[in-house]
Length: 223
Length: 304
Image 1: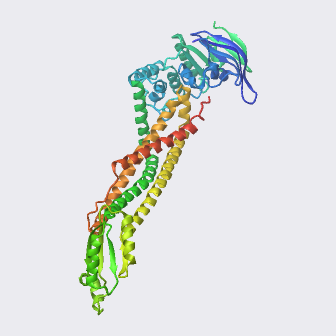
Image 2 (image 1 turned 90 degrees about the vertical axis):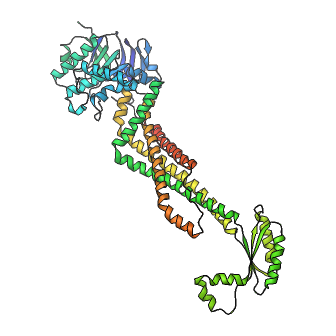
Image 3 (image 1 turned 180 degrees about the horizontal axis):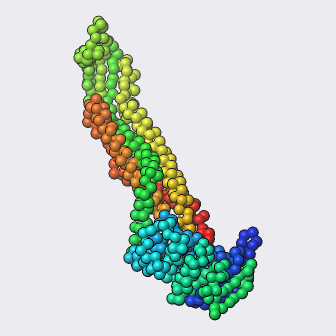
């Protein structure tokens, strides 16, 4: 999935600019890291893609379609096309791993048999097969984040966005999670990851979009 | 289409499962709904029986004509024959003072009282039975005419209290409607509040579902089904409470009926009544759920 921002500004109530005049293009199948200090606009950029926020000015295009203009009732269908990973993973604590990972498929209305196959495949991708019956609290932080990733990819979206997915993890686990994202990207999923952990990125490669106070400060292509 | 139905069935069963997993709260809510619905239904059964009783007595519109003391048996017989010819009168029975006295003497209670009296204090009495087709107005006219006569002491229309009973039943019927509307309103509020708490309780879950692309309908569905189950089970409880109450009442009612000469079969809730309770319960359950969902679900938007 191709994403382009055309002079996008997001001004929050209160006058603070989350993003100002950002233009960028992410090609289909690309892996890109969005970096910058906290408050630089990384989360805002991802929220605009997930339609959790709407741009104040400018256009956010996905495969050429201006998503800023989508009516409210079209938002659910839009979000179903995107896999989202959150810093606090947002798993449901009172549900099993299986139920958590299957939620996007249940929302999409898939049949029970297909759901089972897909969930097992997704858990296999994050090396958590066999933990279906466990509850999130029985898993380590790193494992919980992998469940969050399994849930994001279970419906096989063409776009994966992750907001500080390693924010709560130690360096070794962080690298493991990032390598997992890279593996997922290698099968053709456009992947966008916001992180402030620059040291980690030196080991990973990939394109880097650096934000500073809501502006695009640097765009370093993959080497 | 098949998928759509399957999703609804899943939601429906999942909602029931959730109620079963939190039995105490669910049972309390359902009990309140059941009692609230059983009250007007029970009152309507009482009124139904009252109507049946009033109906029985409507046909027995006999009225009694008490003659003045001292009127001779001969003139009483003459009046009887006269009245028997009157239009609208089916039958006239003369109870002479002597017959009445012997009837009273046969009753132990009055026996002692009558023994101390020298004379027979009772008058001759005529009991008139109107024809089936006779109107109440015609009967009242005859009664008025009789009251005017010099040899008549008192005319007692037995229909008066039937009319009063009917008026009371009218009041009762109207009261039940008001009670039913208020109590169904209460059920809507109870279900609405319970579901509102459910929604607050599941706020995190709703937010995540919306982030993952759940539509409003998807988020709404389990709460509406919860309301549906509250209504359904609540009205079934109401019907059970009613059946149990009627069972507990059946013995005393049978005894009462026997004292009044029997023949009265107490009525339960008829099929229409049962369906009204079910329908009212379902409507209130869904209505309550809908009101809570409409007010509180839109407020929940995911924040990341």
